[in-house]
Amino acid sequence: MPLTLPGRFAETMDRLYPGDGNGDGNGGGPVAVALSGGGDSTALLHLCANWARTRGIALQAVSVDHGLRPEAGGELDRAAEQCAALGIAHSRLTWRGWDGAGNLQAAARTARYRLIADWARARGITSVALGHTLDDQAETVLLRLARGSGVDGLSAMRPVRRADGVTWLRPLLGERRQTLRDMLTTAGIGWSEDPSNEDARFDRVRVRRALQQLEPLGIDAETLAQTAERMQNARAVLEAAAQNAAREIAHTRGGAVFLQTDPLMALPEETRHRLLIHALRWVASAAYGPRRAAMAEVDAAIRAGRNFTLHGCLIGAAKGRCVIAREPAAVEGLAARVGETWDNRWIVHGPEQGVEVRALGENGLKSCPDWRSTGLPRAVLLASPAVWRARTLVAAPLAIAQTGWSAELIHPANHFLSSVLSH
Image (cartoon, rainbow, N blue to C red; front, side):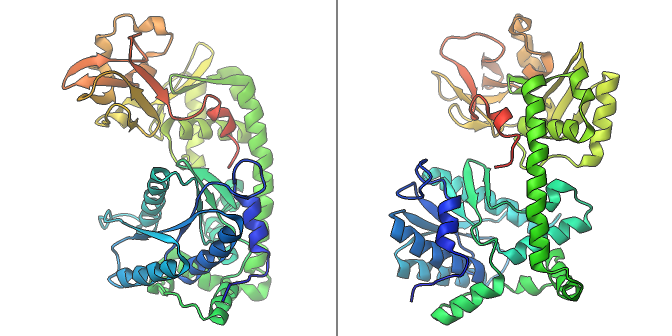
């Protein structure tokens, strides 16, 4: 039987889904559901199936097998069977990157998003729906509160987020986890339970249990989700201030960010740090910025006019400007083919194949005697993309004007400015 959900799921999806650009949510590009086989994503699959069918939108599903539990294969088999019954194409991706070090759940989450984004882009899918619920939102707020997070951290998960060339949709953030399971039970639809959801070794499980103890004090899922929403509103105001400052004092060239030092340091600390963190993320193509604690050292380095490295970037201040460029050491050893993405942000085009795109580096720069005529700082050029045949420099698009060769950022021209705001 079709699933129905209080909270007007269809209206929520119409609002979040970018569609065909007309804002009506009808007849737009394909959508994917990230399907784990658990209760939340299973409910999302069925709800999206109903929504997509009535709006003429192609729907697919994708699952990631992390290779961490032997039962996961069978769970994904059952998920695939549900997709087949709904007439939805299902893909299974595999991750085997866990080396036993660091935070397992964080590593698995990062890999999951990367794999799904790569899969979606390869199929022309620009929107992927995720099954995060109001309970997940509340748990995220409590986790970040325990870590001393500020406005950005406490704003938790946004209903729409654009990253890695994909629009991530969270249409269930207003729904309780138990509501979804009750809905599935009523419809006679089964789902799988991941035993790690009860494993107290994981922070989120401990937070989930702590939240049960806090509910009598009025600290419940709904209240914490409301806090996240208010923090999202506050974050939007702070981001707008940073964007306005960027319009006045920042520009980009050669993949680096150039800021006027005196106006930068005259900004309120929150605005200045927000702008600097955004610049570091943008130059490093990083999903997250550095910790706020490091920004005091950045301030001191800029005021002293000395170089500072942070987050895979080199920060230098001299002659009235602050330059944030890619750190040469961060791209050392990175290689790609012509036409492929290098350092997650550059694509080099040219007439020759059988060559590699690597950083220009010291050796390459020596072969570019007129590099100063470009007007780009030496540090920017050292980490710029160049074309190599073994140890022979073939082309250095940012340092030498050469017919037939070009290096372009994958972002649109105004991306630095537009991406100050959360998407």
